[in-house]
Every structure is written in C-alpha cells, then in structure tokens.
Image 1 (tube, helix red, strand yellow):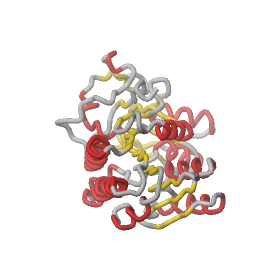
Image 2: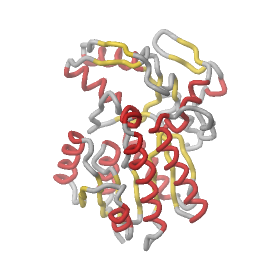
Image 3: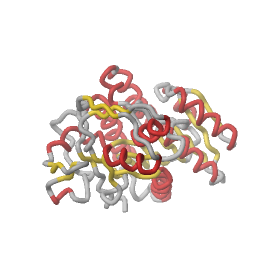
Image 4: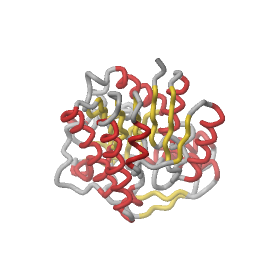
Length: 314
C-alpha cells in the first residue's frame, strides 16, 4: 500500500527536501505551505510541481479545520512549518506563537483524531535551550569560542536545563510545541519524534540575515554583497548537510513505535563545527573574494557556542 505523507512547510528549505525524499521513495506526498517566504516558496513550489507528482496546497497550520482534513488519512506527518526568525519573533510575538505553538497543537489534535496512527516528525531547534548555553564558560581563540568545561566537549545533551533563562519568543514558542509533542506521546500514545536541530545546510536554501546563515554568507560572497555580523563572529555552530537529516528522519519513521516521544539533538556534532569568521575564510579561499564585513551588537540570546551532542541519535 502506498504510504501517504503530509509535509507542512513543504516548500521551505527543509520541507521541500523532505517532500522530494519521500516522493522519490514512491510515497503519495501532500505539501501544505502558506508561502510566507516569497522567493523560497516560489522557487521550491515550482521545483516540486515540475519534477514530482506531489499535491501542493496553499494553506496554514493555524487553520485547524484544514489541518485535520489533511491529516485524516496520512501515515506520516513531517512538521516543518514554522516562523523561524528570532528577530521577527521579537517584533511580532503573537504571530510567532500562533505559528509555532498553536500550529503544532493543531497538528497534534489532528493526529489524535485521525483515522490512522500516523508518525509525526517535529522540527524543533537548539534555541529551546536559550540563554543557559551562554552560562557555560568559554575560551576565546583567534577565530572561535570553545567550551572551557570538558564535560561539554561532545556538545549540549538533550537533558540540558531549559529553565530560568531568556529564550526569546521564538525559543519559547518552539519549546512549547516541543513539549506538547512529548506529552501527546505519553498521554495519547502518538508516535512523535522531536528533533532539536542545529544548523542545517544544502541546496535550495535561500538564506537571509535572520535565518540560514551559511547560505546567506555564501550567496552574499558570490554576489559581492556586504555581510553584517552580529557579535564578534567567533560564534560556533555544528553543521549538518540536508541529506543526512533526511536519513535521520526516515530512520525514526521506521522505529517510531520504539522511540515515540523521544527528543534528539541533531547536527554535525563536534567533528563538524565552524565559526562565522572561519566560514568567511573558507568562502574567500574557495571563491577568491571576500565581502565587505561590518559588525553590529550581539542579538538577544545568541549562543556563543552551540554544538549538538548527537550521541543519543547515533
């Protein structure tokens, strides 16, 4: 029997790759997206429409009736729909909450009342750990920060404290959705998997200052556009290529009964880290030119170092 898959936020960077991945596996894929990021949405919508037999629907996960209608007969739901910019969440916290928390709740309720027992893969974020990550002592090197405490040499684990710190509205809304996903697994037996992602990169990523910084730096360098760095540029993140993420999702799908309600930190781990300054140096070496760089104040709750401890996922 053909597997029926719903991808919310399915013309975004990650969502479009998820849709493509399962379409190539022969699944009956439906994409729901509100097309809020115009350039990304237009390109990926056309890409999916022209290359795959995917059902593309313009709609919003905040629309409970539409969500329940689409979920009713699905075997797999991959929730990539979200408001993803920290800056936008500060400017408009209500919209951020409704997209990231209420929208996630609608998906869970739709699954709870579904004709089937769908697996739900939920795209969460490292921002759920908030400012507590910055309470860890760091050592400043030439082009990067490193954790001073060897306890965190492998990165931040899933049981790292989320309490008593600033998260920004984005971190709060994603954390609320994250916890709802965990609770619906425990209370109602839903097969949810929560993936707290670090920096994912790959093709068809149209990065901006607010989101997708690796792509933003690369595109800006290629086009000769200036780049603004918020902070000193020594911030470090672990990075993971999109196809590796898709394989993780699919592995969870195949084992969702066993791991229902589990939380996984997902990224490149300590072997695949880069700072902002280091990436600029890599781009200059590969492309042969360097954008004009300006520095501005640190953004709220920007983590000096975030590395995913991926030992649980392994």
